[in-house]
Length: 215
Image (tube, rainbow, N blue to C red; front, side):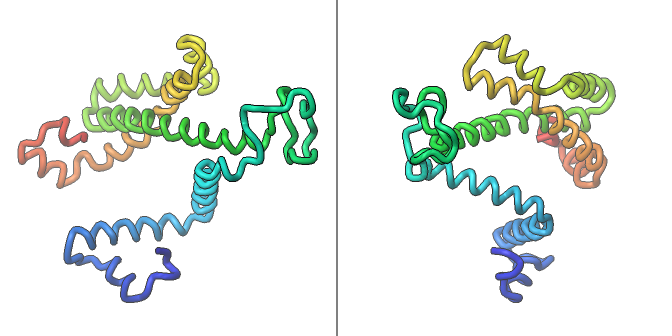
């Protein structure tokens, strides 16, 4: 549902400030979030690119003209782009480059997803704990974050890969280790803005532990 195809009645129902149920409130929040997101043209372009990559990865067997792993070493080695049957040419083993790119989108999505699953929670936890605790805890966690931010991500990732050994799993772990500091910075800034809010004070008075408040 977009802003253009939502009827006035449905739009008013979604954006009401007095929802009649939790379901309506959740739908309203989701719709308001989408409206804010759709105002950013670059964000929509990025979403289209991601959706296109997902479609290519899902339909890789149907879209790829040849096998990504089996090539014709005798007759199709190092063909230039535009060759008959090989739009982007072939590699030194006679494998079709376009097919390898299409199937490679699956690995790309897997790496991005796993890095986000690993890096985002770590960064959010570090930043939230630092912002809520303050004092020396905040200082120590943020100095560790600064150390990671000061080092070039690519160099740091290559160092972790060299220490852990080759392999896609180690590459994912190395990228995740170097990707969490920005999440920590954002989480800390947001936590500093809300840690003294009335609703935080209310749950603290109700006996909520610091760990529960952070979560």
